[in-house]
Length: 175
Image 1 (cartoon, one colour):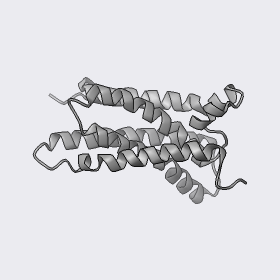
Image 2 (cartoon, helix red, strand yellow; image 1 turned 90 degrees about the vertical axis):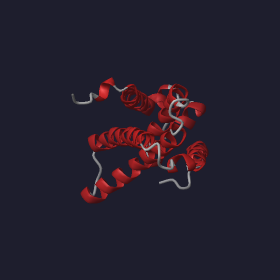
Image 3 (cartoon, one colour; image 1 turned 180 degrees about the vertical axis):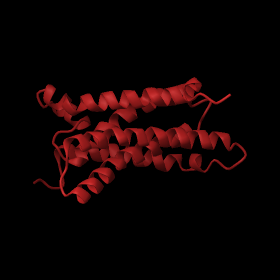
Image 4 (cartoon, helix red, strand yellow; image 1 turned 60 degrees about the horizontal axis):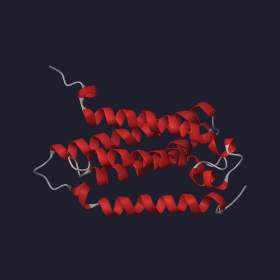
């Protein structure tokens, strides 16, 4: 009998995470304006239309979901402490890579492709998380190389969070 992915608890949490991040990220696009441009809200949501600010739409909801995933699976699957931060980084960086790739090919941007870029980046993030975690878990006799890199991935996520907070109101350049 074929394996049904949705019967896999870990897969379901990844699927729910995809939905959570997609919905919260979509709503977060509007939070800053809905809050009358509240400074605190602006630290975690886009304050302008730059690609950098829109990376927050994936980053912070993924970080929130990480807390849920971590407490649910850390004891049974400790590799999550490295695979999830790595997946946050991959998904967050996929946004500018996809955006600038398609806009350099087309020579302009389209709103529906911008939106698709966000959802595709969330999908890439959770796909990587699922695959990295499952593969490393199944390779129990191999050295868990990802787990040895956990502190570096976590430090990179922390650094990116600090950069998002700092550059929200102190951008490197303005147009």
